[in-house]
Image 1 (spheres, rainbow, N blue to C red):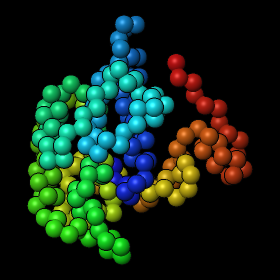
Image 2: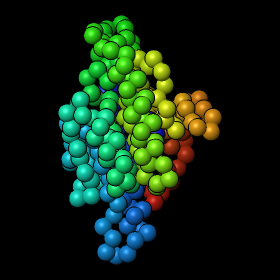
Image 3: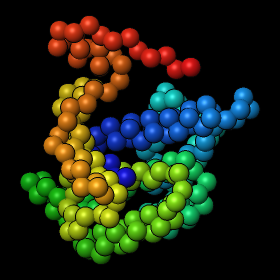
Image 4: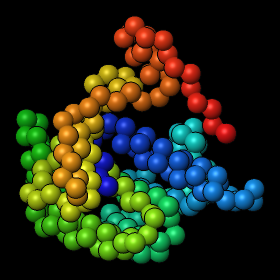
Length: 216
């Protein structure tokens, strides 16, 4: 699955962290009292992942592997980690990689390729995504690819699903299914993130906030 958000919007990271936390919690519920939870992995070549924020999102740091390979090794490391099938969720953050997916456009040139950027960079990732899909075929693992929604796209990535995210207010997103293997493309849908933001939105709409579900 591809999570495409404007560069600098951290909501795709928040959603990926929620996916990791949910996978770990589900593994503990399905296991015994001694089950520690599922392993997740995060490929973070830009070094932007902040451990305290990860912990606040409910992710068990002791079951999260963070890899920070050199940019030129990103694709190879991603495929090898996917082939291991050791992770319930594998997050690949390419949104912050200079030059990836046409980043570095000049002012007024939305999505324009950076100076000296070669188009085969994106073509290479098309092949990488195919390898990732083959590596996880038939498994229960999930791969989340974090990309820049505003980047140039000479060709679409062959992902099973592509979600486009845009923040319209604090705690509120517009989410659009831009691609789905079953053809279910949707128009932008408002989504409220976080319990406080949801309660605020319900009060603004004139309804009583619903009680939060406790995490057993």
